[in-house]
Image (tube, rainbow, N blue to C red):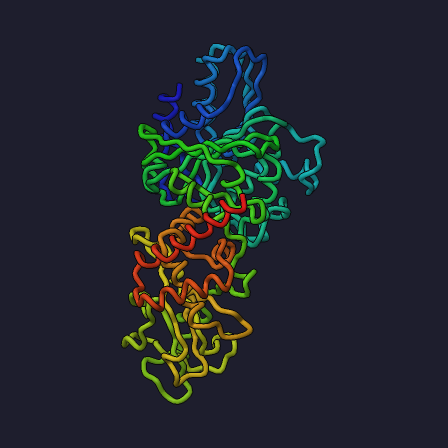
Length: 503
């Protein structure tokens, strides 16, 4: 069954340009991924009836993989509900479902609902996710939801205000509604982007989602380009299996593979309270024992940057929007404009004969005091060995300026109320130039962007301990990653000794 449906889908893909399908956020699941997802369910034998929901069904690949698996489970009746409102693929979907109906060994009832999955459900919810009447519930939900950004005033966003912050993406609205459609103790398997696992943008969704289910399995793809065959999708994706119950005391099975052939799957069982942060509802994507031990090590740190009076901010000046204010040479009234390119081997070099290195403005929103900062690049490439790349900025090295500016592709850490000491800046450099903090951030965020919201949530030592780390770095006069690892390693060893004495 599945081979036939995949074959028909490939013919459709060849005939339908990707740009046309992209309008709907439509990307088709590969056969191998569909089989893997279908295999994640815990389905007992000799079930009388099983109800399944596949919203955003497309050509029916996921439904076919799941039903093909059910052939071995002695089920009497399967009832499948498909939501699909793309008129171009409805004919293929109906043909494929009729084909499945002919081939299965059990009683198979199916229906295709051509309404908008979110707004059609919303009419029954009356705008309230706690409202239960007249909403259908299913034993199993499977899905590859559309990946498409929506304007914040879109009907789908208005339907689910409890999980939206700013302009939402269709995929997490589908996941929200799918969880709502799941029966208590029912199971759901979705393939979705990794982006929801951290950051302020998805916090409301995470809060609803993680307070109403238990994550049982996460699968991560090491390669971005091989998840959706023939689709050239570079989105960071993951497969997630959840159960609609609250049982956060156990482990989450985290598997990973280099691609979608699933012939090299690695598995690690991660304690739920380490994988999921209760405060920020972050989901840490741990792939091996080394990363697990790292997160356990960080649990001894009780502070964050904001709790010790520091904070990471995004640079103030968007250069391409303020071209008329930029200058290549200094003149009366200009101040330095620092870019990521000014970070060199842990220091800040200025000037470097770059275009637009100075800004001529009196706009308060573009200016900041010439004080001590740790600068951190906001963007890195996927190929670079480090995600966190930083440089020490010391005010005394630029004595001719009372004010400076930072380009918005550069983050900076400071205290808004007063100047931080040089030792604290050096201590922050020890943290953010270490292998441990770079690895922590990669576990927290799979993207190449360093977001201030997430950095401000990372555990850090106390301000006095950071100052001590900085003094060690100043004494050694060695800004290499290896030396930062050595200094931070000694700090963690001392923390372990203290905790062992207490215990």
